[in-house]
Amino acid sequence: MKLLVMYNSKSSLDRIQSIKKILSKKVNFSYFDIKHFYKKNNFQENKFIKFLEKKKPNLILDLLPIPNNALNSEKYLELINKLYKLRKTIKKSNIKTLKISYSWINRFDISPFKFFLLFRNLFFYFKNFYLKNIYRFNITDYTILTGNKCENNEKYFNSKKIYFKHYDYLAKPNAKYVKNRIIYIDQYLEAHPDFVRYGLKFITKKKFSSEIKSFFDKLEAKGYKVVVALHPKNTSKDLKNIYGNRIFIKNKTFELINNSYAVITHCSTAIHFAVQSNKPILFILTDELEKTFLGDRIFSQAKFFKHLPINISNRELKSSDIIIPKIKKKIYENYTRRFLRHDLYVNDTKFKQEFLKLIL
Image 1: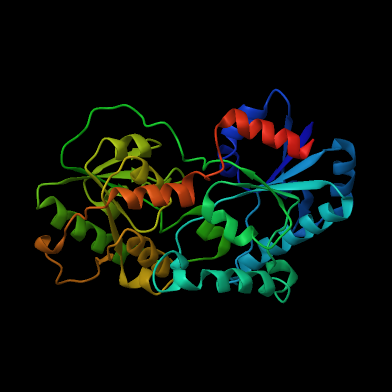
Image 2: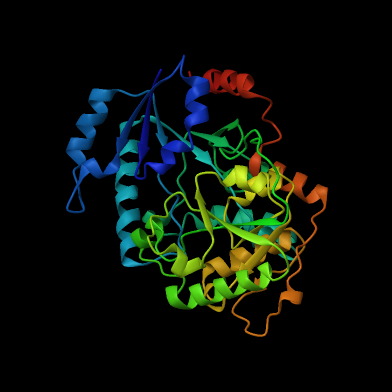
């Protein structure tokens, strides 16, 4: 079986490594970056059609972003126009398509909004018919669901479902526990490549740096040691100016979290690792972040864990005001079922059997 993987960011390929390993003996994977079919933002449709005819894939795995109608910057519109044209051409070709569905916490996971989830799902379905074409939800022939919550967006579409786990659902790494160490999950808010690509700006670097260093100092005055787990895409040469004189470690986030006391985050999906390690999670935001859609996400994530975020822009915040929250086990378990492992996923062997049975 020939499976063609379509992507626009190499980091998205890391997310399918476990799937590739499971299916490798039965499925031939090949890849293409969509930039090869654009010249000065002009879609080379004929070139793309000939490429598909030559490859003759049985299935295309679409790793491109799902359009978000809350974003409308010039750069973002340019991107989703590209995605729309590619997907439209694939649909005309009658080649079957597959996507992987991930989900994260939003307001419909907390009270009072969670009581309106059914109406939200119906609204999402009908809204899709009235959105501009470029913003419409990407409906594929098959969908891999990585958690129970992924059902919501797929509920009323006819995509055939395959059940799996999130790419962050991993075996716990072994390392020595470090007492009183707290891991701050860096999100590279000042210059994340995706933010730059989409023309998004969430913080003023100088202001954020002043606030985060002050907060870390107050936390360390309580006897904790803050270590910064750098975002994989963070290439900054200015880390000490941003975070102060602290330790910075890259590509070891799960290991650091699993062997530390607690975690600090804004709204990083790396809280997956904190959940699997049963670690306390302290959510923080700033005045600037609160005014963006990330502010809503931070509040939603904190409330899911039955706490409120700390606004580190508050100049009157004292060390004594900072409390590391305790989280009940059932909350971790609920999070795992909703976002990290679908209830109908049994094991990798069963996933392989269901995948091949459904698609071949």
